[in-house]
Length: 155
Image (cartoon, rainbow, N blue to C red; front, top):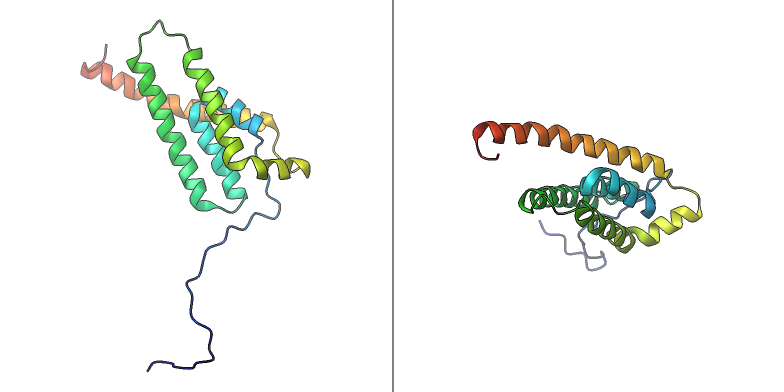
């Protein structure tokens, strides 16, 4: 039976609202850039994902991690395609500028708020995350390269 009470407020769809962690901390923009320097764009995605989680935005946290992994794969593919005499800085400097710009653009205001209240992680922690991301990339990449070389796909 349909309820036709004219005084009842209309039903609306519930909207998910991002609620920050009470004791959450964020990585600074400088930490995100340092993590990127140490550990590829995968570290950028991971650090920004952790910031989004601390801010309560889990959907964007998943997106940041996905985009970081895609960017890492693209950089590694670019390294393979370009000639060997291209200097490493050609890859590194754009990654650092991109990480800085993306972090400022999407999280800069919130990071500044957390910095003002001294609720940010140490940049050393971001460097550690970057090194762990670099290790993760190597753990995946080295066996892949060996398999491709044994299969005769690459020299």
